[in-house]
Length: 507
Image 1: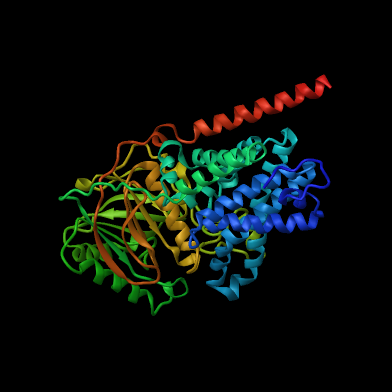
Image 2: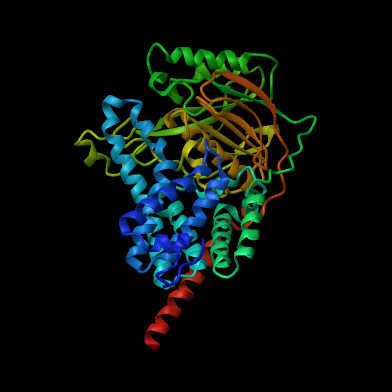
């Protein structure tokens, strides 16, 4: 693609595109946004993401006004999120009679709302100039906003397309937002080179493609005496999980798997794995401990305290005595809790997973869980694993990441696999192995380079014993977090705004 000038006889692709009516540009931008989403699981087409992002920056170069830039940025973002987040309708179909009518509204407002961040990036970039490097900085800034604003929703960020390549390992240095900046800047450089030398642009594009498909050649060490972890996956479909006749089936299935084969060092059950409250669990915990035969055990469970309800995980010893507890701190809005709960309850609108009016209460926040001889774990429950800064916020560095989740909410096509990919990125960022146990799958042990050392497939019941890989030295990201990228975005965009105002005064 050649950067378009004002020549009306330009027959290049860019020239053709620039002469299209706005509705055609919008349709093309939406289609290219969907192409960019093909790098996300289950597609895994990182080259498609490269092409989509390249087109994103090329489209930006052709915009003639801030208004057009905003519109086309929104169209590109909408295409990206509609394909990347189409699984969002799945939670509403678990109880379709009650919640199904909300599915199209959730799809529309979430995808079109998130696309506004692309619109802002395009608009700010066009207001500050047409240099593609400005757009790279603006997109990095809006992805930061997507992570932190209104509790955040950084699902399907661009860097996840590179988890399987050497490029993804850069997350250990600068985190996913630093990787965002690298990827966006590379796309900007490609478009910039095209306006100067097609030969150099072609060489650069081939280099980007090559490094994007180069797999990670190294693996974490697994010591001969590494502790062995048993992953227990009951495969409790969400629409069956709380049925009176099925609750004992899933519970007994987990007991059976816990007692199977030779004893191990750690047994892990998934999120809310048991059909009783913690204050009612003395005998069940002893039963689970007997089945574990000396292993430390971690399970997901609900608990109540002072008329508040918590989504929790607990660890307990071979006697069933609780040794540690973590309450989920970052809850799913409109799922586990409802903003303005009492007001919305008047219209019969409740959170999808909420058990009482306002849903679950927030826990105290990131912590480490002492597992005795196994070391310390940084616990995460389900949705929390999509936030890189949460895994990084524990008061001390652990020896492993411990993720309990219930991906039965996410359907069977893309949601569970995208969630797994994000967990792999957390392991890379932290330089820690991760034990991930999911109700319906995919349960896995992940090494500090993001490799899956073993897993139980989606929608399959069973258990799997795996040794725990060694952790790496603390990564740079564990030390600096997102702050270098945040400060860089603020300084650069602030300087560009100041420059524009000075030029405006001079005129």
